[in-house]
Image (cartoon, rainbow, N blue to C red):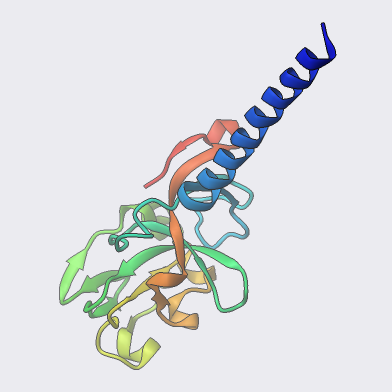
Amino acid sequence: MTEETKKNELWEWTKVLLIAFGLAAIIRYFLFTPIVVDGESMMPTLEDGDKMIVNKIGYTIGEPERFDIVVFHAPEQKDYIKRVIGLPGDHIEYRDDQLFINGEAYDEPYLDEYKEAVTDGTLTEDFTLEDKIQRETVPEGHVFVMGDNRRFSKDSRHIGVIPFDEIIGSTSLIFWPMEDMGFVK
């Protein structure tokens, strides 16, 4: 192999690697990124240490949907994973462990396991949106989020509503540990 051929081959490999790293950076920054669940606030849906993929597609151009599991920048300078309960314009209320949105009762099947285990009251304490954020409805450009482990979750009941521009994306795919791999609801 001549010196010229070695230089050309090295240059070709360098270009391939630069393109690969560039594509990986674009995918991670704009489309998908991994995240590790830190804490028990989303149990039983998500376990501490679950590794998930955050889908950023749609959150740069659209709005979250009710009951999406989203990742957002919290006021404590860290990222939280919570479930969207209230959308802009919604009135939220809990009575006797039942979610009411704009006066209509909503089922939350992802809470059934924890509700059955509670023997000393309710899983979710009674409250109205006015009690928690001093407003009748979720403001435009914001969502009201809650963790599935209602008794042990720091969420919109404590930190207020979340602006759309703080939402990184939604997540529903666990990729590690292998035995838990799959989509969550």
